[in-house]
Length: 440
Image (cartoon, one colour):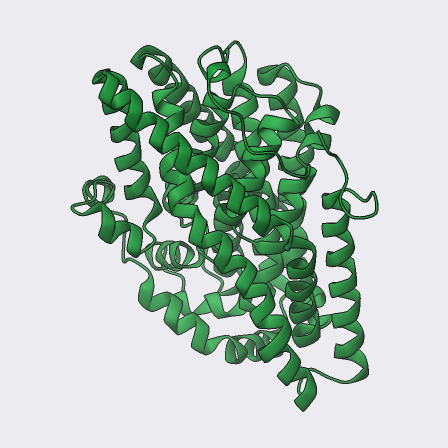
């Protein structure tokens, strides 16, 4: 396996170099020239901004065919419905348990440190004014409440092509799950050929993704330059207490909970695990999108962690949308922070409701940048906190989005590692491997 790229530098190091150059260059421009300068606006709007967005759009363009083909093949390669049921039950239970732990850590830290009590009202008004337009748009998209019947009804697409065109990931995944089960049940020469065709779609998609990933260092540099040039140090210093508590809770979950789950549940050395998932973590942090990081996570599971491919395909494609520990944690921290800021005392019962809705919200949140904000707005309405207060955190949400997405993607790989324990890959060994590509 080729572990280097261009001059002997591994691709994940090139990603980190691009990240550092973009951040440093953006901060320098922000301090030396200013974000309102004509040329800064021109470069960020017409050069670095589009360059980063082209990379993201190329990845998003391939997400639907990747999700469909990987999940169908993953289910079909289980070989029997008992294996599928076992993997599915493990995935569901671990998602609920680990997400619950994440929300408990976040809520506990907010209650202990109470970051919302000491926010400067003048700074809050500035942030609220700055994010007023974005906040109103988010509040408009927020559902008024979670209706469990409607939630499960929406999982079943009346037209899968419409769901795909509207980027409704969960309904597409449900269709792919049923399609894969159908392939297992209707075993015949014709379905075997159909499965080979879908495996071919998966291989073509992975090959195209390999080409796109080669652009990652440049794209990451552009994304970070834009972020730093326009927001500067304000991105890191505004609402420092809120950011500190949120990042601290995520760090505890990342470096305490995940290693214990990987070690005890997955039987893998945590150091080996984190060494193998560096590239997905960098892509997740840079793009703030679980869906964008999915292709790199699939490659890391196969080439670095050496997990059974049938399990990794199933768990990671499901987990990209359904297992979002970082999102659930962030939603809990944000709701309690804004409740403290607006001096709304939440009872223990209300906080338990917040925790349960956050776990469910983590399952139903789109794996795209800022996908969790409508869910946060909905929870705020449920507990009597002004939903427009979400404008307070918009100034720092991009950084926190990057952090929670990293937690989400790492959690998917943790889940795949645990579910893979005791599973074999005998069926997959007969199929064609992933196309050759540089290691990430």
